[in-house]
Image 1 (tube, one colour):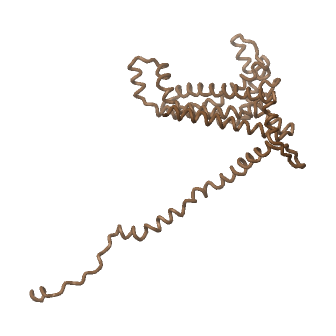
Image 2: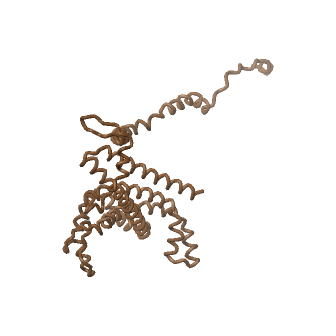
Image 3: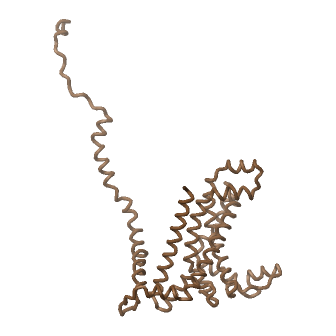
Length: 323
């Protein structure tokens, strides 16, 4: 082909511009991908469904039934009779319920304060990254994983009131006389409180250990340079840095203390002479031993309301302090 023919030739027809691979992939797969993702919103609920069904059947439905029973006179096989707030009046006017509520508050306060204080001391002693500390932490955490029935039986053996009992033998070494412990109305409450502190302190220790990692180490160095002692550093640096952790532990320990039942039931069953009767043991006796299910349900609802109020108050105080 000559130069003139080449110059006079028509240019080739322009075809469609090639698409970029990125845009083509986005145009083809973008919408189906979004539709598939939006269609899988139910996947987490599918995995949660078995647990939710168990909670519904074994927790929420019984809670609703207890709330209904608290307004009824329960008569098995005869039909329940609606009595309104009569069960609540019976519970609130009962001298035994007021004493049980007071014992519950005292026990919850003692166990909460004791477990948090002992948990803080253990956490400060076991803070670090050594492998040996890991073994010691695991050993200290054992009371939490041991079944509560086993713990109560072990302490019942140690609380044997005779002079050759385990704890009484230790008291004899320091020249103190034998104590009745759970068999004495004057020491039974303190004995149960000691058992609860022994079991709850390791749990608080692990949470406090996790909270200690968030405390600024520079504050310790600054306080040390200023001449602060170890006790002053703990009080003015560690404790304020763990304020949020303490509030969470307080809620958990208070709820655990208000709902105390197993150790009291197995150690003393509310005795001797009702000195360790708590709300949960009283509800158990009213509902299952005396067959007054409506009155027992009313007591359980009142305990739930008290626990809920305590939790809400603590949360409100936390929000006010954070502002």
